[in-house]
Length: 387
Image (spheres, rainbow, N blue to C red):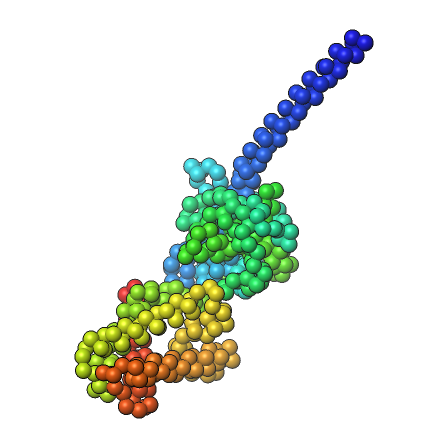
């Protein structure tokens, strides 16, 4: 009987000790999981360095999905002349070899995805691909990439939203997440707690905090089924280029200056005081700036945004003969007179509401509006060349 009691006491002690060991072991495994995921993901992540057609350099991120195959964003390699990849390692003191990109083997412009082939004997384990259909709000995720050129940056966050209709730039389902990224992270992997890729970093919003977006990995899986022979880099120009957009303050100054210069110095407009011309110019300038801000916002319909972004064709003859260019030519042909009519409408409202401002007739109003639009365009082109 005594032996049985002693045995039960020993058994209790063993169970308690085993529970403690299991508890400590579980915490230790959990504490090491992020480190393990970071090391594993970095070993398959690359820094993509691109030289554009005009020699301009740019950087992005990517990750291996197969032997010599790297997934990244379409916009990272679009317009490239040549490109290289460098595998990201934890040890930043180690010199990394750069491997040339032979070309692209699959692209999906609408979903901002591309797969490139790397040559030079490079090898890295492909990252395991998860199932983005199982992703839920609040799920812990990790992003790995090269923001602002800081190689192999590993950040944690969570899925904050799932957008079934995408963003104005990305069509289809998009994952919104909070893990810190920046420019240069594009094309990097977003992985879950098991180290599986569930998304590809594609976009971040500079006008907010932690507004980051990734393309679901299932879209990449579909693209992998379309892998074909190596092709040259795509060289399509984007219509909504920030390089051709003036900041809002400059937009206000340009429009106000154009309006003031025309209505004060053109004898068609009758004004008694320059201060009236200044107030009218500021009012129209503010209206134009606010409408531009609305048109540039992410909530503005993508289709209308594309129409507003259309620029005048460089070669009219080519545009008339090109089936793909004719829509742009027609859209721009409608866009210009519509804008002139809008300015004429504002001038007409001013003519009715401001007693010391006088314009006689529709044709005079339209003529002044046309001069304002032309002056604004000239000033914008001059400033874009400087800025």
